[in-house]
Length: 288
Image 1 (tube, rainbow, N blue to C red):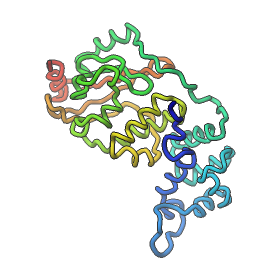
Image 2: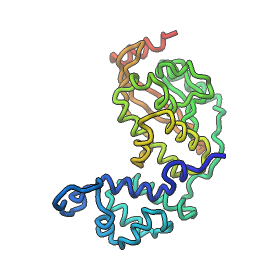
Image 3: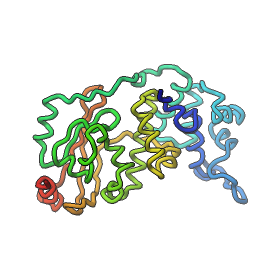
Image 4: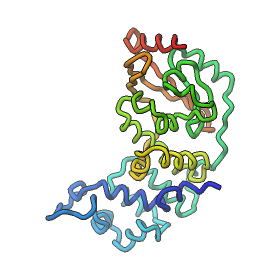
């Protein structure tokens, strides 16, 4: 039986998130004097953050130690301001708090449901319609449920994996070719882990996601440190640069189309009309 994501790494994820965020701030970030001498640990001290947030040091220590599990909205908002959280991170703090307190927030996080794997015929036709733009349909936990030929060819070596193993997160962290395929692998690794954290806050009991986190801890040396940063981000369309072993350099812009509430989404990679990137897509489409 899988443990929940709250116990995969360092137990209480609200406490872990607070510790990680406090470590990223310097006293000068929150208007405090840096003081004299070296600090034994990075970031703000607990008493400094408690002072900025307007809570008692003892109460804040209990939060970080996981002994306090029911902070009020006022406390959460004060901590979010003191930690300089953005809107997504603020919402993530609330999600973690709701799960630790075992209460259901309005709107509630998604209850665990087995991820749907069937793809509607109309969506499969859409994959063909957008060719030669690479495109694929993902499930809630990034399993590749359907793809056009260019979508498989873009991720060099992915087609060699069995169908049930094909997952874009697994490819990114576990396939050796991903390190050379993606320009600025480290940046995209942080973005991918941040997206996983956002999903984990919504569905802490999802065994599929738990299994991926455990697998990446074993198989990817960089993953534990990235996971411990507790960054959060919802994946959106973005530009990506590839160093493809067959068609060479190309930069593509992604668009993500979401279908209903079952977590399925289609990612389409597009090139500017008349560009060298479009020509590279033509060569990718002709790849056997």
